[in-house]
Image (cartoon, rainbow, N blue to C red; front, top):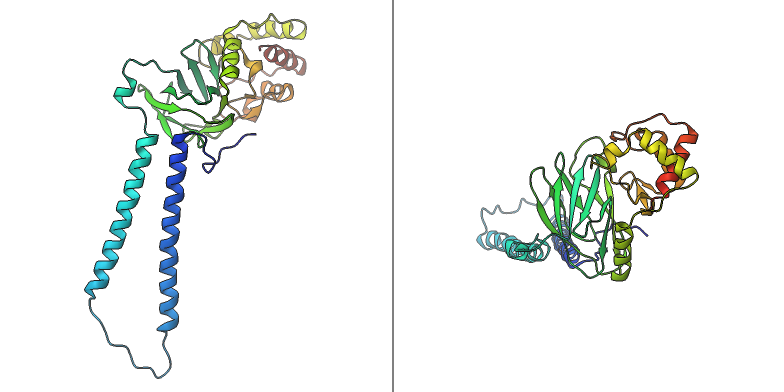
Length: 305
C-alpha cells in the first residue's frame, strides 16, 4: 500500500524530522492557547460596565516587558537546539563520510522523470529499490533544470542541480513502497514527476538486482511484432540514450510515466495512444498509433521482465 505521510516515518532521518515538526506544533499550540486564554480572561474580567470610571493609565511595566522578552527568547533557544539536533541526524553526509566511498546509486533528474543508476550496473527509472536496514549513499544530479527529490517517509528535500552533485542518505527500517515527488517547479510535467522508493528485505533486493542485470528473454508472438515496431519507430534512439527512461526491464516495474499510472496493459495502451493526454508536457511523441499497433507495442514492453 502506497503511503507518503510525514507522520509515518520509516527511517531515522524521517523520524527526526517528524518529531521536530510535532514538537514545534505542540509548542505553537501551547502559545496559542495561552494567548487566547489571556485574551478571554481580559475581555471578560476587565470589560466596560456602564457608569464605570476610566481605569488609571499605566505607562511601562518593566517586569511584564522583561517577562514577554525572556520567555520567547527561551522558547526560540529551545526550538533552535531541537532543530540543530534534527539537522545533525538528517543532514547530507559530510566530507569525512564520503572519503573514498562510491555512491550506491546515482539518481539523475530529467524533465520529467528520474533515472536511477546503481553501482552494480543496474539501470532503471522512477522506481528506487533499496534493501531494508542499509544506509544507501545516493548522488543526486540533474540533466537539465533544478529539480528536488522528496520522499517524506525517508528523508527531507534535496535539490538536483545542473552541473552539481548533491549527496544524501536513503534508508528504510521496514518494507514497503513509499511515494516521492519532485518539489521544485521544473516545467509542464512537474506535478507528474513522481517516483517510488521500494524497500525490500535483503534477499528480495538481491533477487531483484540479479533480475535487472539479466537479459530479458526474446519476445514471441504479438510481443515479437511489437519489437519490430519498436525498432521501426526508432524508440531506442531516445530510450537507450537517457533522453527517455531505460526500458530494458520495463515489464518488471509497477508504474509507468514517472509513477503517474500503474503498469497494466490497459494503462500502457492508453499511454502509447496519446502520451500528452496522460501527462501534459511529456517529451514522449504521439506517433498516432492504431489500436493494433499500441497493443503490439504494449505486449512487447510488458514482456521485458
